[in-house]
Length: 196
Image 1: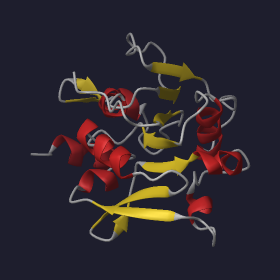
Image 2: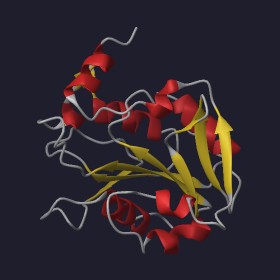
Image 3: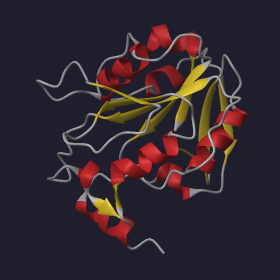
């Protein structure tokens, strides 16, 4: 078990309420290196003291003690990423400086990367990782902007906030393609299985 980042005033929100339409099966329960894709993402998130899991497949095994599972309130229709994000933000404990948003289909994210991002975060400012000049995930949203998150609609997540002219955004350059690697399609999964 990895060490928890104890000096951080941020929590993790893991988004796992999608329908896996491009995969044709529930991608979050696909196996990879002895675990499911979602279990890898949750393991990385658990480097933080509080973790909110939004959605997730039925029949999950016992979750780590710091994980609180919440449902996405729009499960009767296809939820947009904004719906999941809002559900996660609403479930956060009070008194945080920010929330790190992880995607349940990004199994290459590690607890070490989560710790590095948490350490680089400055309260009041977004933090976005970059690799080879490309922005990736997970992103940290400052608590000052949580109210704006709750106004979001659609399937774009926090991107409209980051595009706001007054958005205070810091970038952290990392030599880690994991921040750009999600598993949406059978081809993505095949590439994941071929990872060295």
